[in-house]
Amino acid sequence: MQDLRIHIKNIVCQRCIMTVSEILERLDIPFDEVLLGEVILKKPLKIDKLKILEKEFDKVGFEIIMDRDLRLVNSIKSTIIEEVYSDKLSNMKLSTLLASKLNFDYSHITHQFSESEGQSIQKYYNAVRIERAKELLDYDELGIAEIADLLGYSTPAYLSTSFKNATGLTPSEYRQMEGKNRKNLDSV
Image (cartoon, rainbow, N blue to C red; front, side, top):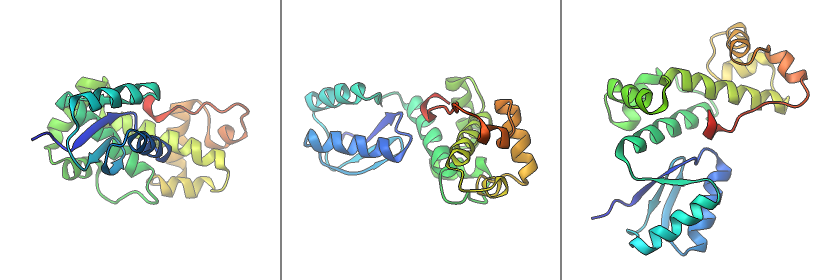
């Protein structure tokens, strides 16, 4: 039986989820849920419908992932993005969180990720946190200490140091800067 999950590259935010949902509805493809990185269908897709779906996804920058190892990497990214963009980071170590959510040994997870992405999971996680910090700084609603707490930095100074190492600017300098340079999460 065909799997009812379709893994999709570049679903990295709520807007992406809404776009995928709209495409599925327009193509009359019944689904239970659209999540970061995947869709859970109500019934298997026929090959012709899958080809149409692939073309529609391609038009908006999404890609169906068939390779098992790439699906794992996509799931790692989705789990990290979901964690960083949650209201409060869990107290769980990243390695424990990924191993428990993905049901793989962490050494396998980290090997697959590094092999595919050319960077460590920790480096990717830190990059996503920096992009989230930029977003929160752009909103200008939270102080540096609040952002540090929300993103799991032990102190505001540690956030500032990490931010400066990644961007060349302190969070305060970034907040004052004209023409911000945030990255899309699918390019982190």
